[in-house]
Length: 111
Image: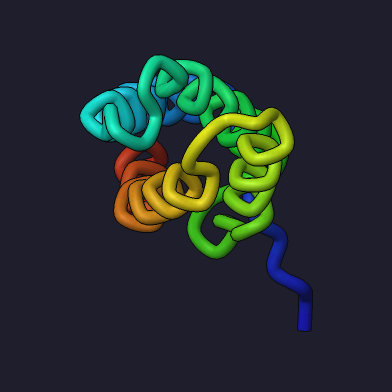
């Protein structure tokens, strides 16, 4: 039997999905003033950069959403001395689980 090959990432999808992700994270984290304070935007940028890189290089549709980028978000935020790494990563993965595969299907007309 032939091995299933996932589609290649779609740069235009990655760009559009990254922007949706950035907006969601900005809305979510800027409301958490007690946790993030003035550093919410920097935390969002870390998460967005990692998410965008993943979407552009590895995400090829349903079945390819990995946990690694979200672990990287938590680690990078912590390593940079920014607040709330685990909480930001949890918010990011929750959004991704609810939207990315569904949005891919809509984008590609496969859903």
